[in-house]
Image (tube, rainbow, N blue to C red; front, top):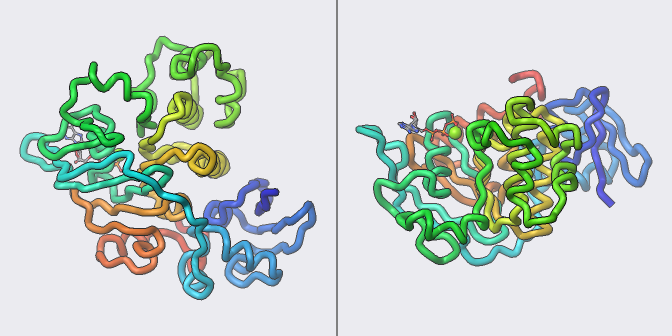
Length: 331
Ligand SMILES: Nc1ncnc2c1ncn2[C@@H]1O[C@H](COP(=O)(O)OP(=O)(O)OP(=O)(O)O)[C@@H](O)[C@H]1O
Ligand SMILES: [Mg+2]
């Protein structure tokens, strides 16, 4: 069974401690239907009484456990079998006029792996996503997808491989045909005859959105339609560009759970782009830190987030709320 943290009064059900820590004033820890412990979020997460809570804090990979506590207990992450490279970028460079927005980026995502890409606004994250996906051509450098050339290949010759690679765009409205209904947007990505409703349900959308057009949806609903559409062809890799930043915290937790589940059950690899380091720490195996178009640091999330070697990474991390500061109040 899944063990969950219950936050009141918003009644958020989550195993994501980072999300709970940010949102909740109080936390109830439940196991097998029984409340074991109940207290203020900061106290409970930093100094739990019940052995089970301690166990959970040790086992749950989460930004809420970052910092002092984590240094004591260590960070246990389920060992994921990581396979052959799915996508590989070598010396990737993109110039617009005089500005170099992507500078010699090397990046590999392996089968079943979740790689985070973080960096401040304008650092080049979306540009990397567009280069990898093949929306724009690199000025120099190469992208290899599933062992075969991807960049520099004409689109008509990439078409048969396209479904294996999906993009959840930072701006989903621009990636939908405005005349299409949600039903058609999702159905078009599914094998013929596979119903749309269960997939929408999986991303937390009801049948009421089926006949609406993208403009008739909220930002969060649009984001979830984009996720459903990306999942539909069962891709080997999903490039997720800020897939949860438009979502409220409870839906965000739900979508992050969903993405983690998809990796666990289908072995789908994710390139997860976010400015939220807590979310990346929670979800990713490895992380790349971008600044001014270049990757300044990369490695396993625990190494990069606990012992950042670059000042820029340290500065990014300092902007993240921890249990030492009053959580959920400093944003
Ligand atoms: N088509 C384009 N033409 C000219 N400049 C561009 C183009 N696309 C992006 N840029 C520039 O490239 C730089 C990187 O932009 P990018 O969208 O990749 O940043 P980002 O890291 O995704 O930022 P954010 O966190 O705000 O989404 C910015 O300075 C941007 O203005
Ligand atoms: Mg962006």
